[in-house]
Length: 75
Ligand SMILES: [Zn+2]
Image (cartoon, rainbow, N blue to C red):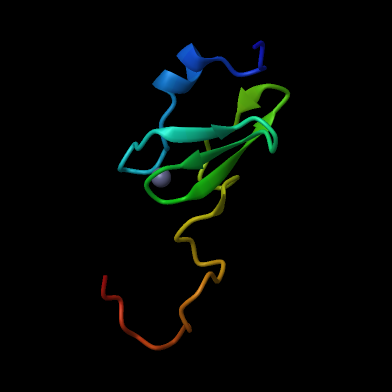
């Protein structure tokens, strides 16, 4: 196999968030998904864009799930 992102690179990649969790490579979608926070990072021209600003999904404010304004931040 000769993907644009090789295993050696993937091994050193980590989520830019504080947990620095390993990332799961999706060769079809050309994305990297954090195994901890589920953020999805794009790969542009074979270069992983590991920026929280560029990530989609995950626990960000961009509404996944819970109703906002409820006031509770329990986990
Ligand atoms: Zn993460």
